[in-house]
Length: 284
Image (cartoon, rainbow, N blue to C red):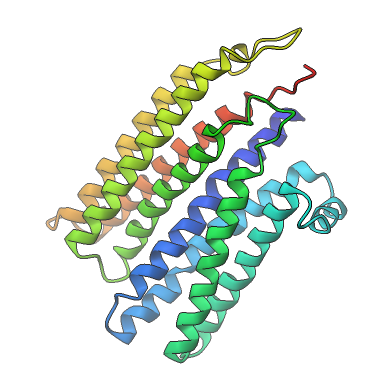
């Protein structure tokens, strides 16, 4: 049961934060699109980050047991970090989903669309923040470190930037300068994630209880980080080619963008699953 729970949470903290960051980046880039038709194309493609977050959220409910428990979690908003996380993600899903449905069904006034998508972006930022601190629990010393929110936020920023660029390639493309910024942001975020996880690995050696040592909890720690680095490098190379090689066909560009997204999300999943394997309470 613990394996199922950790896997479902790893999927959630991979897809949901990355999807919310992608939504924010796409909203920012949407504001720079001059023509109305271009904005409409972006509005249609906002379904992709929305569905990523929704899929992650649905997967995460597996560790709650029953829908009744999920409703109970919501009632703890303001008191429980888990409740704050759930409520904030639901708020984003409501704002982003309602905006997308309204935007594709009618031509929204510019001010209404701007305010609506801005509200969804603010909700996304808040939700990522609540998700990042939901695991800073005093009774779980292996999670209660600065590296926990740092790795989650950095992973979400990187994957979100990469996903948003891949999506924008099919919404009319990006200017080279913007593509460069997003790819550099992804590379830097990967370095932050690796640094945070290496420092966490070092700190695990100092955390012990009467019966266990934290460093022995996650087998293959260094190997998983190696696979994360390989996946991230592959994602970066794939999207670089999709963004800057003008001679490739549209089908090849689409294949590279999809491969890049999969590699980036898979890398984040490896790190998130590794994080959950370090679970150890003060009494164990």
